[in-house]
Length: 153
Image 1: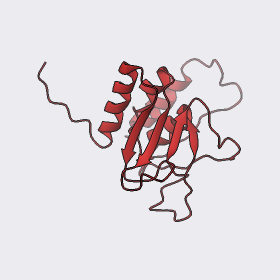
Image 2: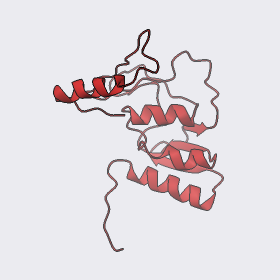
Image 3: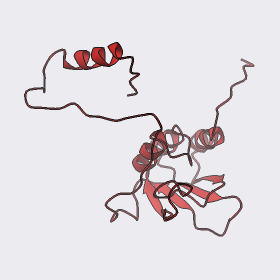
Image 4: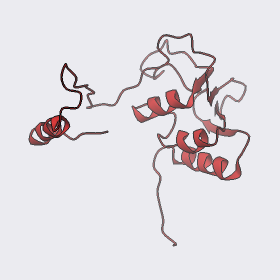
């Protein structure tokens, strides 16, 4: 259509994933400015550790909830076709990187990673008798709306 689209930060990650899916590639390699995916932001936590591997679901959750190493949409196309994705550092190519795939070698870690979104809070509404209670979600969302709170699903 001749339209210009700007994908934003890590948009090239998403482009690479879409191309890998279209080509049914054996692997999608994403080169970035860090050695791979860390347990948390190494700029904020000096003891952050590089993860050898992680599952598609783990990578998707970390990126969606604030990890900046990957665009949140990157994982969907490669997971759909079970294409492994290797995250490597352009400036440190000998570093092992992080392999994202169907499963993870680091499954023995009780917590795989921590990310954050500034000015965002997560909460869960639960309690006895709520299951199947008609209108409960509507009441919660209405209360949030009245308070001027934007809801991210």
